[in-house]
Length: 159
Image 1: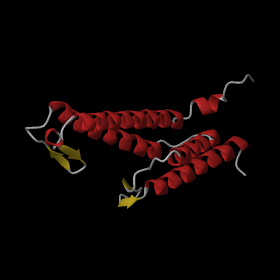
Image 2: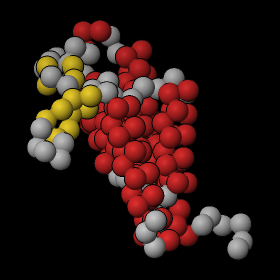
Image 3: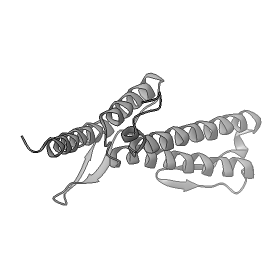
Image 4: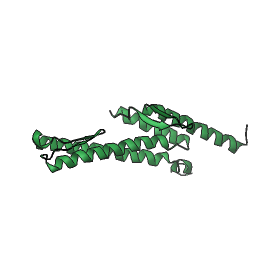
């Protein structure tokens, strides 16, 4: 076999989810950087609008660039949150995928970034639950390992 990755790892959907989160994170950071630049250029009275998870408070006297920046930061933040949740929903199908996801999660934190504090979900029984993002990551890893182990037993012909 050449130096390329095992075909099984290339097909693991977790790699696309990691890449999507990485891109969403970069886009969010860029939107924040642009807003900081505007904040330094515009007087405070021209940047009163706020957009956050609770909604938008827009000021008619604001500079239109500030309003657009606030909306851009919110959209980028929402996209990053969705991408973080997608990392939990896409189950790694290989051990290499589990390692990549685990390392990515730790590296993201080592770089000074955070994961969502609380994430909502509905379990198999239909019960709503809210837990830290890391809880659902561990649950996803456990389910992935169970599926890989089960596949291994099937490939070996039941133990």
